[in-house]
Length: 159
Ligand code: PNS
Image 1 (cartoon, rainbow, N blue to C red):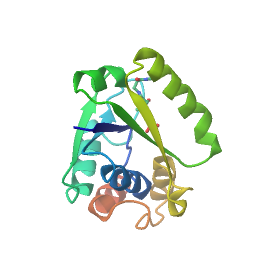
Image 2: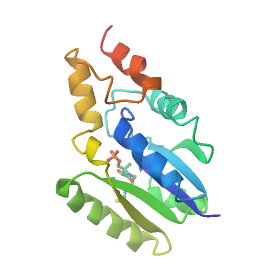
Image 3: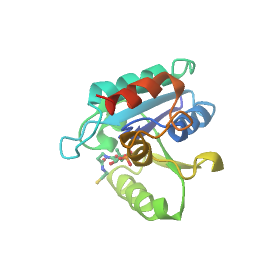
Image 4: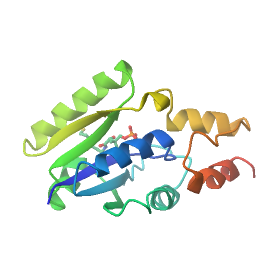
């Protein structure tokens, strides 16, 4: 079975992420969206919240599951017999870092390929940081995040 992983912080999931999830789920047989549990990176949303937001947003995709991981992505992929890492690219500015990551991951395990999907141009400006910035100043994020998580994100900043 062609299994792929789409890793990220998803703090929070955006419509740009969801577009990559939808398109990659149409290419592979099983897509695992995996949230990095990184104690060194301060997230606004807890790991549980990020996983829940992804689960709520992906219920309509029957071949998509949500999980989380600690440590190296490549170790998780090997353990779960995943052969493909999916990454989204928005702009040239993403490329340099993602290129380095892809080469590091290939060095660590040459049997796992990284596939890049270009963002939908509608979402090329969109990032989790932009969503948090707008929400923190009370701006409308309705068009930026999946409807299933809109209230969770908005309420985080309305307390
Ligand atoms: O959404 P993000 O924060 O851009 O996602 C980054 C992520 C989680 C994909 C990346 O940091 C990652 O894979 N981290 C796990 C540790 C790892 O395997 N690093 C690569 C080798 S140094």
